[in-house]
Each structure stands twice: as C-alpha cells, then as structure tokens.
Image (cartoon, rainbow, N blue to C red; front, side, top):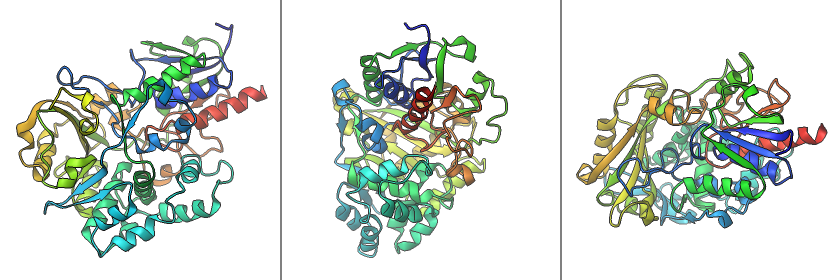
Length: 471
C-alpha cells in the first residue's frame, strides 16, 4: 500500500462505490471503509424471513439504475449485473378491477388512462421520449454544473418539472391519470403540492418508457457486488466491518469522501454545525413478505407488473403523504409495492414469492402499521393475508439501524421540501465539497438526490479528481 492514499471513501453504498471506482479507474489509489460486514448500503439482499426467500431490505426496483449515466460507463454486466424487465413496469389499480399502467410503449400507457386523457398523456411525454441519454445527464446533476447537453429539452423539461404535481394533474380530466401522476410524484415522500414534485413524476414515467423499471437478477445486492468487483479490478480496496467515528482513525489520504448523512459527516470530520440547517423528512413502514403464491390482485395488469402503486386517487395519495409529513399516524396509507419474484424466480423457492411493500409514516414513528398496510392490500388483492408465510417489518427506528444514512428512518437522506428540493445539502457552487478542503460528501444528500444510480458518487468523484489534479 502506498504511504499515502489518494482517496479514502467512508461508506460502501452505491454512491460510495461509484465514487471509489471512478477514481480508481483514473489511476488514483483508493480504499473504502464500510461499517457493515458486507457492501451495499441501500442496495442489499438478505434472507429476512425464511430460508430461500431473498429480500431487498431497502430498494428493490431500479428505473434510475438501468438509466444511470454513471453505471452505463462501467462494465457492470461483466461483473455479474443482469437487469430483468417485468412485462409491465408499473400498475396502478382502481377499485373497479381496472388499472393504469406504465410500459415501454407510450401508446399502451396512454390508452390505460382512458380516452379522455390518452392524448394529454402523449402530449406530456412525447417531447422527451427518445432523448433519455441527454435528459438523464442534464437532470441527474447539480443544475448549475455547466451547460446542459440539450438546452432546448432541458429548459422545456425544467418548466414542467418545477411545478407541483397537483398542477401537472390539471392537464388531465379523469381520476385515473391524476392518480397515476400522484403515485409517481409520491416517490419524493412529500405532499404532491410541493415544488418540483412534477419532475419526480415525469422522470419515473420517462424512465419506464425509455429503459424500463427492472430488478437485478438475484436482488439489489447484485448492483453493489458488481460495483465492488469492478472497483477491486481497478485496484481499489474495500474494508468491511469497520465503523469510522473520527477522521483521524482513517489512513492518511489526499481526500476523504463520505457516503453518509450530512449529520454523520459533520460529527466524524469535526465540522461542527456545518449542516445544522439540513432537514430530514418523513419515513416509511416497510414489510417484506414470504408468500405461498403470487399476490391475488383483482386487476389483471397488477399480476404482471414489477411495481404496483396501491392507493387509487390523487386525493388519497396526497392525504397519506400529508399525514406522514405532519406527524400523524397512518390511517389509509399509499403503498409502493414490488414483486420481484414474478420476473426472477431465483428470489424464492419454487412456486413461492417475495413481496415488498411500504407506506409513509412520520419520522421516528414507533408504531406498528402492519394492520393498516394489509387492510389496504386486501382492498385490491382480496385473500392476500391467506398467502403470508412470514413477514419482516421495519419502521423508522429499524430502518435507521439498518442504514445509518436513514436519519429518523428517512430513506431519502433529506426532506424533499422548500429550497432543499433543489438545493441540497446547502447552497454551494460545489455541493460535494465541505469547509474542510480534503473532505467531500457523496451520499443521496447531494445532487441529484435519492435513488440507486450512483450519480451523487459520480459527481463527487469529479470534484475530488479536479482537486487532486490541482494539488
């Protein structure tokens, strides 16, 4: 090992591994330290319930992973990452047994919204279809980091994206389209009346049409394992089972990069109150199920979809999010669910299935939402409870223990609210840099924010190698 490393990365989640791999492939000496015994962060796979049932404790479906410019630039397929596409990316069922869907086909998706809104949906997304490469590069970054690759679409998309989803929904006449948009916007874990929630909805819709909403064969751990394998191939080292509490516990290096929350970074690096104004958001209550058969959705489309949004109307979805953000117990939650074993039989014993569902709850909430979650599931899949072989539940305290970046159980590592929606972790020309010239932040608390896409790590690595070249 050289007497001084070029970079030390703290945290082996997708962003930390991406930052390390990008520096290593440029010839820098890099070492990664991870508190857990395995790499992964928010992209892990474990047997949480019964032997042979492989669950994703955090993220499960990866529309921004398969569409990530950072991942596209690395030979991850050679390192074992294989994307599996369900027949339908998303189904959004309604009480009458029908469903709105997202597929690779804009036309099929538009028609599922009904004749009154099919044309409006086409007009919304078609200016951007076929341009994912430039759109992803332009929007999965800090907005002021250089000129956009496609200025026309960047400006046009920006005008749509900055709107609240409630305003975007006014383009549609029917409850089906408005429900679909609200469900997509809900991935922001914020009321759909919030600024830029339209951008979240549009990015997820376009990802479905352009690259799909896939799952990795074998589970989300495959993403992290592929990144780690590539990093090692490039000469980087990974040390697991080492919790870093102070900067001086790390080996000498020219740069230190933290795939942690801003709170943890400030504590470890001695930055005091540098991020005291940073806000964390609402949490969720997550249940991983081992099932004796597929979920018995009333809507036929939901039986073919990798992801199912449960909570039909825009009003119900917004009410559920408002309750979580304002600190109220969940009553009728909006659920985001995933059924990866439909497309990847290796995830469960033959004929069995894994299923993943979460609803939103207040930060730090210590209650048990199992009953309200399953009541909502039974509403759209009668008989669901009869299939449950085992369940593993995790509320905010358990999520925070599982992943230290999830402060108060916030799986987005920061609230999607107010100015923090577009400026995180604080206003800075280079948001990955800190008051310490050798310390950088690369977690989901930095642009472009949450999701398993590695782009925060990519941009942080760029900031680091600029500094290393200059010194």
